[in-house]
Length: 136
Length: 390
Image 1 (spheres, helix red, strand yellow):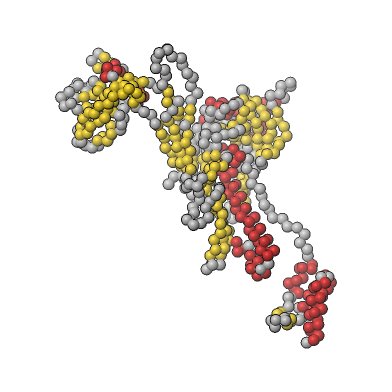
Image 2 (cartoon, one colour):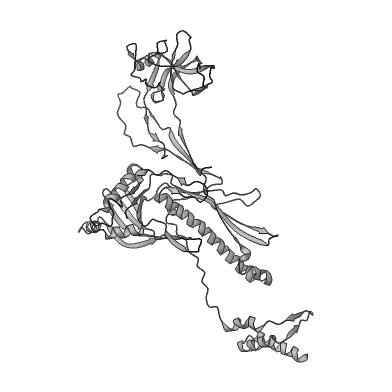
């Protein structure tokens, strides 16, 4: 056993105030276990009514935001589970997780993603961090 | 037979009188006779050779080297004692940000302090013992059953226990030196405890600005050290202390740029004086370094290492080529954890646990002392080390 063990903590909270929540169905249609991260932005596939992580270049309806995952969630291959998502209120902007390549400035149907999120009822609040981790 | 008994009585009287001359005669006499005790026990006399030293030499003084362990470095690491196996620290570094005004009626600026680091440390374990029945008085105490001898034995064993504790104390002093020099406490068993000193706090100017070269200005190095401590280490105030290695202080005091600066008339910026001792360290004076003030110290204390061949080498606690700069009251600790122990045995009450062990089968009597401590730079950026001598 090492004589020195280091653990870093971050007690940040995703949902800040005046929040509303909704449960949505998600299916892991891959052949591997997936871990969905807290703060991941989701869209909904119109034909299946299931939510998937949002890609702004999707064309099945999931390019529009419908919720943000509230906790880390592990999903087995082929498993269908209900995800708890925040759909309104103030949310910590720094904890929002977008797919690689996407930004809040990405354009979907002539509107930026950040405006679609605002339409959803979610207000992303920026923050100033006053603390730092110790030397590693 | 009557004559022999008479001779013995004469000898006994001569001992009772206590005169040296009579004693010598008595000793000679005793070597020639055998005594019949009143109890009927037959006892041989003491040979003259065994008692001669009593009358031909006198012990006038004894000297047992009991070397004090100085604690200048440990004075920056206040002791904290615990009864757990491990100790931990929780660290949250901060920022010095400034508020920005907002429009009235708006939300304001959101802030958070959520990041922190926990470091859990298993301190190294020190366990020193000795076999007390090796002591020169141990058998004497058994043989004589004399209270005075027993008291002397106990007193000397206590003193030897203190020597073992001092050995551990030197290790703690060395741990503090290692934290101040490199940030790494080295272990013989287990993994070295690396507190991850910032690279910017471990500088080597011996190639670019060696103090031995007269044209080089040592003050710029002190300024850099103070800036680090204030800006990165967040050490408040502008007054710091520097502990100089023995080569570093010589090069500093001999440096012509430094001497010229200190020789400005009608300026009382620097005061380098004769050393004043404190806790094994020497205070040499105070200098200005840009906007900061630095108190100059040296710590000429050494510990010793011994090779397998028995060669003893003296080693300075402070690297001769380096200078350590830090605040006067850095946030450091000397943390003591519990040593291995058993239920039913005396509990550890402080930094050390002492006891003894008797092995009747082997006829061995051991006395031991244990401790598990570690020097911890809680605020690891509140120390700056620079090598100034090539």
